Image 1 (spheres, rainbow, N blue to C red):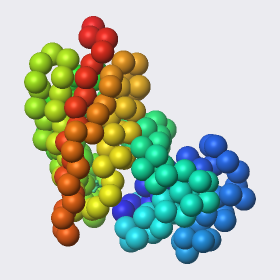
Image 2 (cartoon, rainbow, N blue to C red):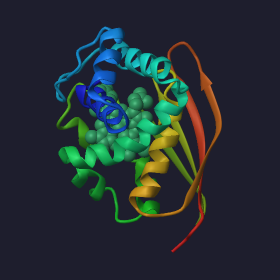
Image 3 (tube, rainbow, N blue to C red):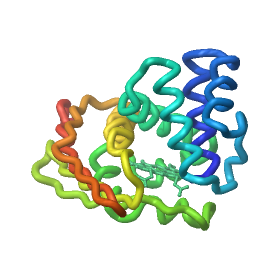
Image 4 (cartoon, rainbow, N blue to C red):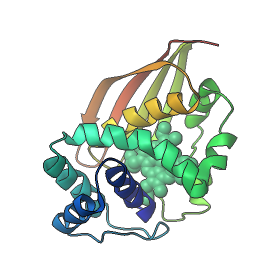
Length: 185
Ligand code: HEM
């Protein structure tokens, strides 16, 4: 994955812990402690960081991934991708509808080696969205939960995100989420 992802993990660790903790995590994971955002690194580096952080901080990997998803929305805004998210809509509902229209396609222009996941969106009612996620990567469903929660937070909305199912095969992972909007306005 692009270094931007590993940089976001670094930022998240630094926000709650200190430089020493981060350097120890990176060292044990066998990766650099700084990354070039626009360079594409081996996915194994990212997985190693999550797994060592989970071990060292005593936090389950799924919790780390969920926190990471939330952090990502804020992080990409700060790293200059905010306008991309803005272009996706001025409300949570509009953004969720467009998530299925290949939102990462706009990112590919800047990051040609991107291997983004796919989203399929079904609007069940004015307050209920079903979001289906599919990726060739394993084990990142909790990150999607955090991302959807982070989006609600970004639009200052109350929403409950539930993972309805998750399924892994050798070469792909799928998960289905229910997003219930609790404060329709
Ligand atoms: C401007 C905002 C965004 C940027 C710049 C961005 C960029 C990226 C990048 C660089 C990766 C790593 C993949 C690779 O390097 O091949 C990634 C992965 C991912 N992105 Fe985004 N993204 C953005 C917003 C979102 C949003 C809003 C969602 C979902 C609600 C999302 C869902 C994911 C997921 C789940 C992955 C993990 C990879 C996988 O599942 O295979 N992203 N994105």
